[in-house]
Length: 127
Image (cartoon, rainbow, N blue to C red):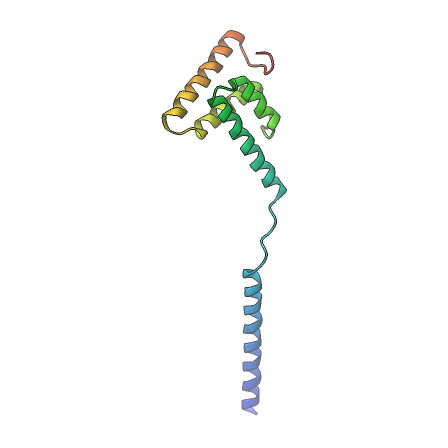
């Protein structure tokens, strides 16, 4: 009788271990989840802003044109036009390497400072 009970207990333990192992294996081999659409939008905005900064660096866009592009790309919060210019300057400091970054940031900051002195503020589209 003891051996029957022992065999039953061993059988239950083996069955539970097998189930736990199967659960673990199914968790390990789950198919990856599809990307969140919000992540795709954020990545697209990041790529677009990076391209805008490249165009500023290459002299294709002014600071104010780049700020307008940042506004059009979206996800800038409640940024006013001057804040958008500062976002471009901030992105430029991150996108560039070494001394190029410092020179670009100084040029853009000078462009903004001169505009603020001359106009008292920034209104995109009015430059």
